[in-house]
Length: 456
Image 1 (cartoon, rainbow, N blue to C red):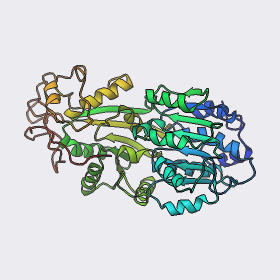
Image 2 (image 1 turned 180 degrees about the vertical axis):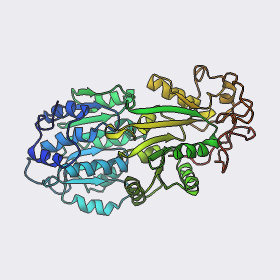
Image 3 (image 1 turned 60 degrees about the vertical axis):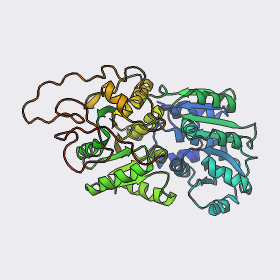
Image 4 (image 1 turned 180 degrees about the horizontal axis):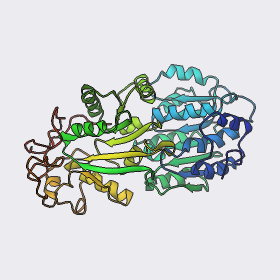
């Protein structure tokens, strides 16, 4: 069995590792660390929760430890670019754990925080700078940071940087980094655009892949529940009540919707918080700290805000809305089953989301087990209004999508969630109900209205 000591890491790093829970390298760490220590460019493909931060952080710090002199005012030696503030915070915290007791200086610059304080911190320079692209460009334009001595570039969660439109920012930043550098790219999925980035910025890279791109962690139990939009909140309540005392992360497509859902759940007695792009950095940090300390049972988040959440106690992920980008599904459910633990994921699917479900199952190369309801009939899918950017199903939305006739039920037996007693799918108003079981004993409605709120 490979050990960190066998990988040849500095004794200072090994001393720091002894004080953490990292005892044995994960597959991505065992494969990537030797190549990075040799100075090779590397493309690492691994699902979330597999230890990518240590995979690039430990060998990077190993190479920086023995330089012996500070980088100089406003200069940095290594740049780690990430898509979100939460991921930047997670990486900075991990690197500071590894560098405790050494002279290596790690700084972070992100939007939503005081740029003047960041400028002041950069006057001494930094060995490692963890940054979001937008804030880094702001500081570069002000002359507060220089990349001319940067010998290492790390692109973490590169696929999500593409989703968020950071490719132009990357091009702008890369122009100021010397050509003679070591470049590392890490991603959980491998869309074609990532291959193009690798060809542009990496030189003869080693490719390390510990699981097929898009394959979720094996320890995550997945399923889908077919339910009208208007019934999703009550269905979520039912699921949450099944595992009291266990933390859950709920994904919502919009910022407004995340806030609204959090208020509804709080009214039903759950300890809940919400994070999204409209929250200040202090608010997001406070809510995440409360969730990490298990003062909250439920965290409602958008895709952007949830990137970088590494909380081992999260046991359940609920996709209240299915993501428009199928790769984001992999990232979402990767927030559970961290550090080798088990986890579960449940996705709620309304008629208008059959296209998204089809795209997710195509990426996974499998059909998600049905936990409740029945796949929506083609007529319901066609009639459902769609928001901009939503996918339309290609051909038959799902094998056997037309519900079969329901078996006779005994008198008084409730219909499955999302169906009337006649077996036809119900619509939804887009507003959570305040009472009654999802889809049970309520008159059918016309169909889901267009939800309010846009963006993530």
